[in-house]
Length: 176
Ligand code: ADP
Image (tube, rainbow, N blue to C red; front, side, top):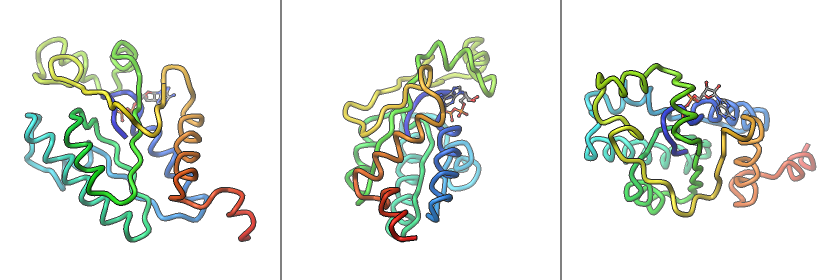
């Protein structure tokens, strides 16, 4: 998943995780905020460091997914080139654009970061004074200002089924 801070990545990831687990699948969320406290500890927010962070997340997600674990990545991932590089390196990849207008993300201000960025207390904040490059051809777009968390999760599940990455609900029912 890619999208601005506060667009809804973590919220949708958790709902998706729940729904996939209900289907008996193994799931791991690689959340940007959490990854930055361990796997990417010490990295900052320059373009280079952000790209390194996303490459690492992509690397681990690929290891998980090729061993049958659904890996959900929820980091801003602002740069198109590294997202596309991860796509190339990953056998099974679905890009989800969690798309909410900046004004909406800012009004949610889940972590109080936008207020700090506007006050100049945080420099290089995505969407304020750092770029966000929208995906050009994402498999799924979740418009979180207009749809519910449940609707967004359903769209992603449907895309996973369409791609043959997870069994469809019909196949699952038949197997029981
Ligand atoms: P991110 O992980 O992208 O930074 P979060 O998931 O932490 O974003 O925050 C998104 C906020 O928006 C949460 O407070 C969530 O409850 C709220 N929200 C409102 N509507 C939606 C929606 N349709 N989808 C996802 N989040 C939503």
